[in-house]
Image (cartoon, rainbow, N blue to C red):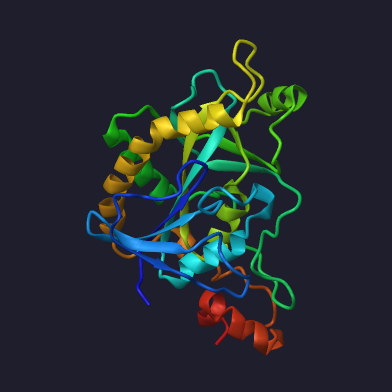
Length: 289
């Protein structure tokens, strides 16, 4: 099976990357079911890349229906060490305007109906998640977007709501009081699962609106979201062309993402069910020998 070092998860409005060279579609099965869609393997600037449309082509899957475990596991099975997640988001700050891009460094979880771990059923794992985004990869994503000339901001807290509805005005006002910077629906559990899979994960968050707190702006609509995302589509694809060689030039990883499970497994090794060891060998095999 072909391998890739960089995985790209495309969000709303980003269902393919036309600049992929030698694209090959591949179907991957996982212990958690099927990913959102077929993955496309190819090259960007000569670097092996795997692309996955988060919501499926044609946008068929709601945020709460996403099989994020299958998506992350599938990318891991292709050898992916770095994931950049393209996401639409609302801004909770005046200076983070629509069509700006933000590379967040924190998340705040307001989801309630999503499996957020690969483990359980006889294997207990507690990863460190104080820094949910890989700082090394986030810096590379920032550099890549900066090279496009687009307005880009480094850092910020991404509030993740369950959806699929947008916020009420009361919720939006309270979230602003909490001091969050962005709001969206898909950054979690992706970031948690990527850390459990020992994959570096960063977000390229595209601001599409001011949520509903901004008194002078129109209410959030899908049309508004898509219009602003499509305006940034060219920036996204140019940034990925810059990002791929930056990632490929990193060599051996020394960030904590690469060894996240080394001190996280608490279950006594000889008590882990044999079938579970077999099913999750891709993730924990080297730690359960």
